[in-house]
Image (tube, rainbow, N blue to C red):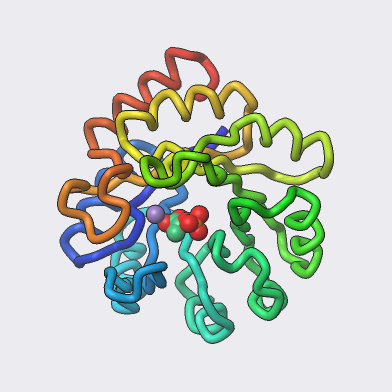
Length: 235
Ligand code: PEP
Ligand code: MN
């Protein structure tokens, strides 16, 4: 099981550097983090394309691979030199044009499930893509939507594996919704042995521009890794 970690979005050059330095020192090879960030609320932070330049510079110094969300066909092309894996977010699970656009560039795709979509719909749409695709579960809608945005669906790791042969990632941050739940959600997910765990980590989560409650501090991330090692699921 490999860990993909990084902030919800890279926000400043300083934070980006701090995060890359920290995560690579922790042996993390895949670093996630949005550049442009389209949100449900159009007044909320929308990210910045400047991130590609920051990552370009950092890649000369640190050895890591970048997972970045793409929202449109132009980004698939313009990020091709700097991105190592494209992320298709939950909101774009059904965006057939975008799915097909990834076929222009040979690169793995992290494909997230939209909450509420059936596994069959998700698997069917995956077939529009010819690249290697990692199917990423990221929590479902719960009944208490005012209190918690999403709820864990860890057992779907097993259901998906039984239905369809694929690499699987479990995003532990979005179903946890709050950083105090991340450790246990991760332990639950780890039992099902996904190929990857994705977790949001930020140098100063309380002041992050997006997903403030759920991102882990660096210290919390270290503790999470320790816990996983102790549970012998992750080495
Ligand atoms: C994210 O990974 O930060 C994100 C926006 O995820 P999702 O598409 O699952 O909501
Ligand atoms: Mn996020």
